[in-house]
Each structure stands twice: as structure tokens, then as C-alpha cells.
Amino acid sequence: MNEILVLGASGKTGRRVVRLLEAQGAPVRPASRSSRVRFDWTEPGTWADAVHGARAVYLVAPEDPAPIREFVAKADGVQRFVVLSGRGIDQASPGFGEGMIAAEQAARESGAEWTILRANNFNQNFDEDLWHAPLRAGRLALPIGATPEPFVDVEDLAEVAVAALTGDGHAGRVYELSGPRGLTFGEAVEIIARAADRPIVYEELTPERYREELLAEGYPEVVADSLNTLFALHREGHLAEPADGVRQVLGRDPIAFEDYATRVAATGAWS
Image (tube, rainbow, N blue to C red; front, side):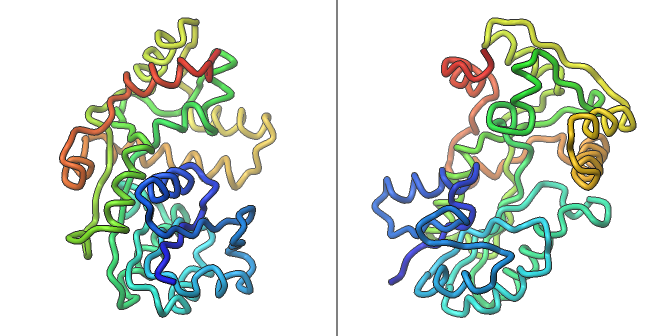
């Protein structure tokens, strides 16, 4: 069948990878819990049909590392893995990002070709999930400090993933993917507010206060602790410098945050 299996096909990166592959006429097999080809990390019975006949896999790992090695071991016909991971994951505290770390290791040890995409925080976190509701409410409050973040656009990430899935010269490479320049979260919110033409403020919180606010909003403790670990990694500066992975693969500069904000504001996402 020689198809490209895209896991997490209904997610933020997966659906864009699917769209680009389909636009190229590549044989793509979207798989998720809600796709026609059903795939669920917690149900090993769904794995065989999803991976049968696939020559390449776009691997978006679950938070739980337990099933990943078994899945990769059973995907014995796969010739290429492209793994979504995070920048600075090797600097993270124990207990954070274990799924991504396990996916990197499993792909490296699989005997197949592998490429790892280590990405900064996504631009789309501001309009699709994590920080969308707070921005619409007019206040984003986080424990970040003045450490900059060169946010990466998911459109760039998807284009890099497709190049690695379909092209040559990417085997054994680890690409660090970011935007063109670092911004503090306060600066990012200012850019969004200007693009949306409405007042939105950024407020700095202590990690303790941030955790309290998350719990008050109904987030589970494990999620609140995981986000605080993420932001502790951010404050240490491991993600602050722009990376050149987008240019290495695509031969162009990554999408600027200002261009992202203008594009998304036109859709009314922050109105």
C-alpha cells in the first residue's frame, strides 16, 4: 500500500501534515481516535490496521511513554519515522515530556530511517487552544518572566514534516524549529492586541499563583504541574535563541509572529 501514516491526524500539526500531503498527491492515511482509520494509543488492537502497509509514519507521541516502544516495534514494515518533539526536551525535569523522549529513543532504535523535529511553542497556541480563551477574555497571565520565546508557526512545522516524510537527505537528522526572533510573552500579547484592534493585557504570575488559577479554572493537578514544569524550562532560557531548522529544510525564513497575528486576527479569532 506504501502509504504515509499520520498519527494525531485531527490535531494541530497532524491535520496540516495531512492537508499538505494530500495537496502533493501523496498516499496519506490519516489516523486518530476520530478518523476513518482509527488509532488509539490506549487500545493496542487499533495499531495493526493503522500501520499495515505504511512505509512512513508521522509520530505524535502520547504523554504516557508506556505504549510507544511496543508500537514502534510492531511497525516492522515502516521504513521511516518522523517524530514530533520539543526543543529543550533533553533539559526538562524528570516526569515532563516523557512521551516525546520515548518516541525519540524508539525511532532511533527502530532500524528504520528517522528524523526528529524539536519545536518551540507554537504560534497556534494563542488561537487554537492553550491561550485562546484567556486572550479572548482580555488577559493572559503566566509565570514566564522576561525570557523570550521564538514561537514557531505550525504551518512551517507541517511543511518541514512533509519534506522529511517524502524527501531524501533527512535521515538521522534532528531539526530544531523556531520562528525568526524571540519575543517575550508580553510582546507577543501586544502584537496580538494590535492585530485584533482591542485591549488585551499580559500579567506576570508567580508559579504558585499560576497553579492556583489553573486549579480554580478546573484543570487537574497533573496538568497544572506539567504546565508549571514547561514554564520553568522556558525561564531557564533553553528555548530562547532562534533555531535554523526551518531554513535548513525549506530554504527560507520561518513565518514571523507579526504575520501570523495579522492572518489570524482577520478571522476574528480574538474578537
